[in-house]
Amino acid sequence: MRGLVLALLSSAIGGTAIVATRALVATIDPVLLGALRFGIGVLALWPIAVWSGQRWPSRSDLPSVVALGLLFFAAFPILFNLCARR
Image (cartoon, rainbow, N blue to C red; front, side, top):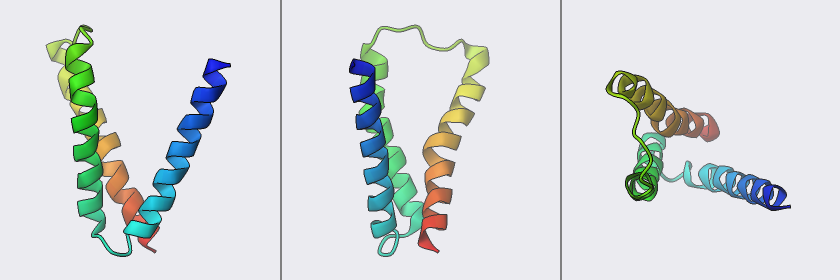
């Protein structure tokens, strides 16, 4: 039951984000909107990552981890915003 509730919550938040993006992209530059989403993501997740006590990726994995993070939290929102503008 917990998994179902979390899946529903995730879908609702994702859908709300898409609707909000489509509304905001008409008034805010898509790159700025993507940067804001990235910044908010960093602010929200950094303390959790630091305080969780989990082991960080090894030094050899850091370039891949950073590249994936930039792809998901920077490139994807900017490209999504550009497409939502049309």
